[in-house]
Length: 94
Image 1 (tube, rainbow, N blue to C red):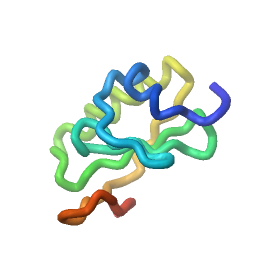
Image 2: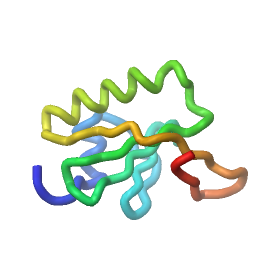
Image 3: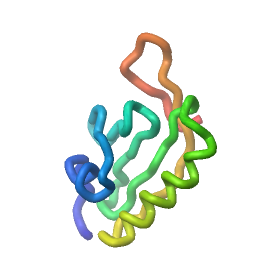
Image 4: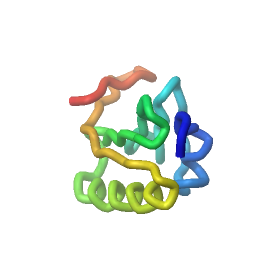
C-alpha cells in the first residue's frame, strides 16, 4: 500500500464508526476498540477496551483482517487498553 494508513480510510475500508481520532490512534464503535497506525502504512494494530465483550473480539479481529487483506493491510491484535474514569485518554497495552 505504501505510506501511512490514514484514519479517514477506517470508515471506508473497515466500514466502522469512528468515534474519535488522536495522532496515530482511532477509537472505534464507541470505544470498544482502537486502531493504532503502525510506522509502516500497511500495518495496523488493534487494541480492545478491557470492558469490551471478550466473545466478540476474535470475530472483530477476523473481520478487520479480512477487510485489510483486500488492501494489503496487516491487522495485528496487539492487546487491551483501559479508559480511566472521567478521562479522555487511554492507557495501552495492558
